[in-house]
Image (cartoon, rainbow, N blue to C red):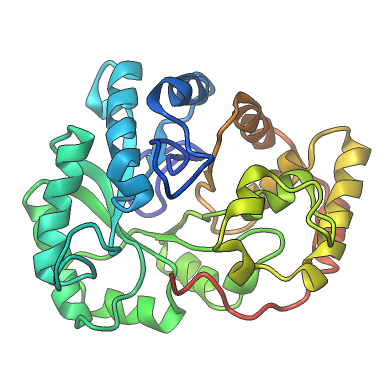
Length: 321
C-alpha cells in the first residue's frame, strides 16, 4: 500500500527496530545474532518497512538495522527505512534538538551508523520548544534536497503543533508516528482526523502498549512482559485503574476467537481509519508471528464495539520524553 498521499509503497506492518542493538539502557534488547532471525521472519512474511532512531540503544539500533537489512535484501530499493532525530546523541549545547546544526549533523551520523547513502523517511522524534519550527522545516527540506532522505515525517506532538509545522514547511511531513492503541485512544480526537483530512499516513507506536496488550496485566503486575516490567516510560503512559477493564475485555474476545490477545489488539488497530502501518516491536519469533497473523484476522463490528466500549478518556501522554 502507499504511504497515504505519497507514491512510496510500504507493508501493512512496520517492524520497529528499537529491540535490536545491545546497550545498557535496555536489558531486553538483542544483539545482531539474535535479531537477524527475527527480522528474517518478518521479511519472509512480507514486511518491507522498518523503523529506528538515532537515540535507540546508544545508536546501536541503527548499526544493527543497517547490517541486518543489507544481509536480507539484495538491493537497497527493496525496503523502506525510517529513522528519527531529536534526542541527545552528541555532547555539548547543540547535541540534541531540532536546530539546523543538529539536524544536519544527525542525518550524517545516522547514515554512517546505518551504512547507507539515504533513508526513506526522516522523522522528528518530538517537538522542540527551543527551536523555531521554520528553522527545523527548512533544515529538513535541505536534507531531502541533498538526497539524504526521500521523505520527512513527525512523531508525537499536539495537533496544533503539527498543523503549524505543515503550514510553514517547504516540503511537508507525509507521516505522523503517534501513540495509539486499544488503551490509549486520545489521538482519535484531533490528530488522526487531521491526518485523514490532510492525507498524512498514521504509523502508531506502541500498538501493544509496551506489552500490556500482549499478555494482559493484573494490578500487582503479574503476567507482564519483560519490557512492561522494566520500561520506565510505561508508568507515564498508562493507568491500571482505567486500563484493566479494557485489557480484560480484550482477553475475552481473544479467547473466544482462539488467538492470543496480541493478534486481536493489532487487528483492531489495522481496522481503524487512517492507520497505514502500526510499528510492531519483537524480541521473539512468536511476536512476529502474532503480528503477521493480525493482518488477516478480521474482526466483526460487534467485536470492535466490545473492545472499545469500556475505554475511558486518559490524560494526554507520549508527547514529552
